[in-house]
Amino acid sequence: MMKLIAKPLAAFAAVALTTACGGGGSAEPVKKETSSGEARRTMYLTGYSYWDNTPPGTAQIARPVIHRKAGGTGTYDDPVTLAVGHAKKNGRSIMDYPAGTRFYIERLRKYAIVEDLCGDGPSPQDGPCHSGYQGHDWIDIYVDGKDVGKAASDACMYRITGLQNVILNPKPEYPVYSGAISESGCPVF
Image: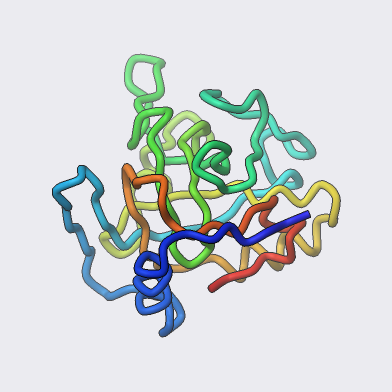
């Protein structure tokens, strides 16, 4: 069962203001550091599911930190698995953001944690996950979908794709809509 976890009204109002226009962000990369160590960014968000993971039909992840398999409910203590671009150097994958890096995705009201790689093949650095989208970093969140099927998870991935306001290294005080993304109806705020 999914539930909205109440947080301070000021944080809720800030999310409401930044997402009222669809959460699309601006055309220019936004990078703003706060005194708390948080960094606000506009990033390109896509989703991946149980059905299109590598290998397909699994929740396997490359760099487990909290989870053994891709998942999470989106709370600060149980963030959703996030994949980031990487470059191969001397046979090793160097991630664009280190495993364990946390994000808060305002429009989804979800915390996420880097635990997976986005981009396959011998030269993932040549792919979009590493090179980004129109000057914005690219992040790929696990939408699950195992229990709702491929069509519903594909529709969810399409719905969330785009420029999004995110917070890098977020405090644990933002509003959260708890639950697997596809299975909770893929809500956006």
